Picture 1 (cartoon, rainbow, N blue to C red):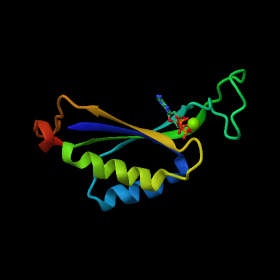
Picture 2: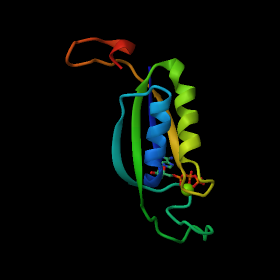
Picture 3: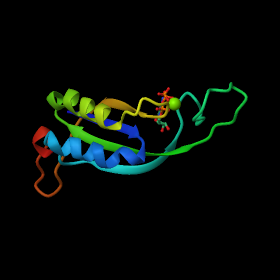
Picture 4: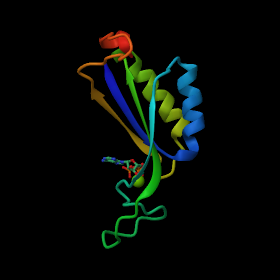
Length: 112
Ligand SMILES: Nc1ncnc2c1ncn2[C@@H]1O[C@H](COP(=O)(O)OP(=O)(O)OP(=O)(O)O)[C@@H](O)[C@H]1O
Ligand SMILES: [Mg+2]
């Protein structure tokens, strides 16, 4: 099992959700976040180290998926979230040790 954390532009959320639904993804968690990347929140031409950090509104989508689903999920998010401009976002893939469905007590990939 892997956890996929994707941070991207809020205006791309509907398209990302559509694409994930189309490949059979159900469970997900969404958080509104503030963040910046290597331009430190600057949206135009990078103007150097002397500028302070600006945090921009993004969304963070978290999904727990089976190992075999990782590539299709990552690809779907890239295709839906990419504009080609700086600030499009980032995807992190992390290992998951355990998953438990609270209602039934099921554990592991069957609980996803
Ligand atoms: N190293 C990081 N760790 C945690 N969050 C990050 C990291 N890099 C980016 N993010 C998150 O992703 C959002 C978008 O980052 P962004 O797309 O600007 O990354 P970038 O590395 O600057 O790439 P680009 O050059 O395409 O802009 C940030 O606002 C932040 O929330
Ligand atoms: Mg950036």
